[in-house]
Length: 167
Image (tube, rainbow, N blue to C red; front, side, top):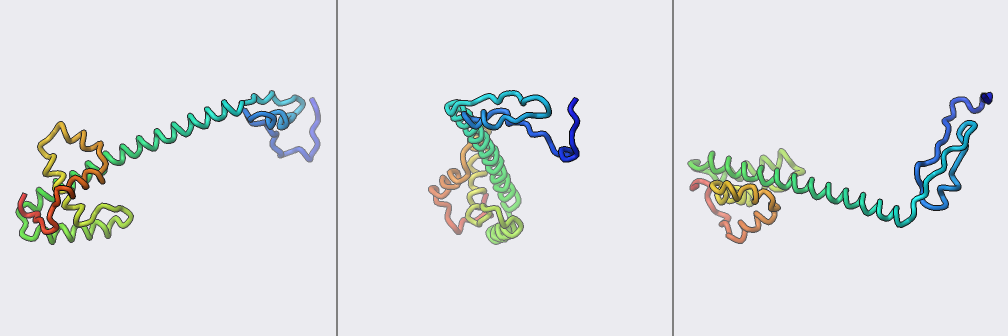
C-alpha cells in the first residue's frame, strides 16, 4: 500500500464521467489511487443525437399530458362555477350585479389567474346550462380547451345584458 502525503488529505479522488463523445473521452481518463480508472465508453454523434431526440420527445410528451390535465381541471372548475351561479342566483333579484361583484372579488383574490371576467362568468353559466344534462358529452367536452368552448359561446352571442335571474 502506498503512503499518502499530507497534501492529498481531504482532496476528493476524481472519477471520469461515464460517457463522453468522441476524442474528449480519451483525453479525460485520470488515475485513481494506484489504478487507472476504467476506460470511458465513447458515444457517436449519431447515438448522442438519438439520445437528445428521445429526451426532447419525452419532455414534450410530459408537457402535453400536464397541459391536458390542467385543461381538464379548468373546464371542470368553470362548469362547477357555472353550476353554482345557476343554482344560487336563479331566483335572485340582482343576479347580474352579484355576478359582477363575484367576478371582481375573484380577480382580486386571484390576481395572477385570468378567466374571472364578467363575460367569462356568463360563458361559465352558459356552458353549464348547455351540458348539464348530457352525461356522455361532459367527459368529451372536458378535453376541449376552454378558449374553444368560450368561443362557441361567443358565436352564440350571449347578450352582454343577459340576466342570471332566469335559468
